[in-house]
Image 1 (cartoon, rainbow, N blue to C red):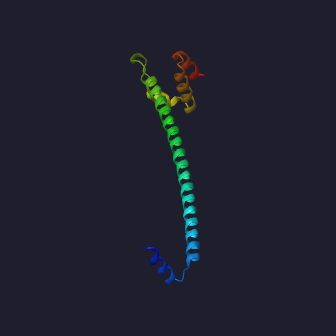
Image 2: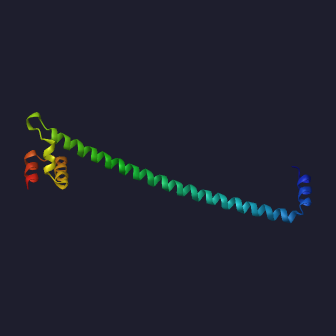
Image 3: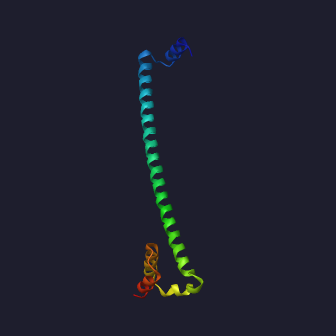
Length: 120
């Protein structure tokens, strides 16, 4: 739109040059506020994404640790062919005792020490 057409449209709507300047300033301020709000929303979104990524990494570490514990227990249950443990025997131990056995297996204690702790 040319300057003359804008002036005619503004004149038709009852806006003079001062009114147009005021409206222009109001719109600039509104745009500035909108950009600020958008920037804040983006920052909040980034923070949530980073927190989610950290939580996901922690959960993945926990899963890996639990998988390792399961592997150690399965190795202990299966043992060598001469030293097989009946899986039903695990029912004789409490959860705390099984967790203690897993912790000791992770530390690499000899089997004799494991038996003593489980019996104690």
